[in-house]
Length: 633
Ligand SMILES: [Zn+2]
Image (cartoon, rainbow, N blue to C red; front, side):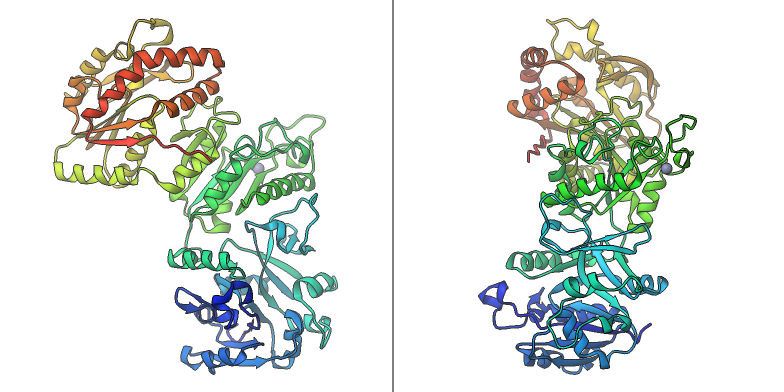
């Protein structure tokens, strides 16, 4: 394998990069202080590819001067200067006598970091004549697209420009090829021919063409903006971290109700409409180290509402619409099955009890293998119970959304709740409570008191429970025993409240005090779990016991509102929210609960007097004040 040659097409000029780089070949444009070409050479060497032919054009002497014979990298480099422009394929055809066996082709203006041995193994296993590296990018609308089938065999080439009505899979030719000499006779001699436009689309069916899809880093530096992006990515370590050798975290996304409007058994492309914040959410994920992977139950196949080909057209619509907004998905995994057989109209082949239908974890596991995902650092974002159960079962952090089906069918609670995918994506990628955790960690280790008691108070919708869960999760990962106490469980049921009561009465503050004192004395506390959707106690019993907890986190509106509660706490956190944001949040929250606009306005007025104005004064008692997250697109 290791005698495989690599041809680097290094003839391009850096003219489009602006005056700063006009006088040097694009290959020598520096990234992180090192010419792009050197990054490529070092990557080749890392995977044992030491034999390189450099095809140069204008300013070839500069490249030759830089590389020499390659001995300074322990490589063998031959420079071939071609003064006559022959296009990418024409230039390779011109040196065909120097090629022995299969060879790799790289473009001199592409920054890449990928496991090349894995690519070569793919090429060899399939006895491929021509393997193209393909990936989703954030501008598929003006990229050269390729279609493949389930076996990764290439089924079509779609060079840019694309007709505006075309829907396509976001799979872009990344300009890295592994080729067999068998394709050389199909390149016309001594004329200007390009691989993407003139050669690949015209190769006969007798040759075996494959697409190798990857989530690794490949980006050309053709414009000043793109060069700058690559520079930033290099400096942040993102390029190296994207190599398949490293696991990456992912955000797994349900499809219907998370990315697109929930219509119930969607089975035609024209029914597909993006939710307002979906593309911004996916874009946010794309800008981070997380992968964006769709995990979807599509029983429309088993129900015979559409075929696999039609479902793929729906997914092409999704990728096209996201792509137009510069958002991309790193994978789409779906289950076509359904377990309940016996209906006359069904497709019996798919009516099976499979291992991939959510809440089963088969799809997540398949994605984790294909994309080398670190599940322990990953999230599942969904709008239904099956999503939350699947996420739990796969060991992911779960996020329920209040859009789509809004998790209203769910008996299990997600780790976090957010309004839409954009909010969830901001929370995941920005890690906004990181500093609060560090403050807590220091206070905890300096105090030595066990259990260490944290009280988190503040107005409703200010982010208390998200913060409380975040801190508990991180502390548990550090091996701490955390008891989380939600003061909502002491709330009077809706029917037992009266308008003259203030927030302290509504929370039965005296009960909280005595119950917490009993808890800290070692007694067991039993309560009826409060359902925030029905606003009443449920039949589920909540049981609190101190046990050997090293940390207790108490969160609730009134956590800092009474002196007796404050005196129990070793660390007091206040979550602050301004009245405009509060009104916006309360409105969205109660719309989700099904209240109408009028009822919400009444509730807001009442809460202003009986709760908001009282609680907002509690910030004076806090050790830290945490501002509510405001993620607006
Ligand atoms: Zn299945």
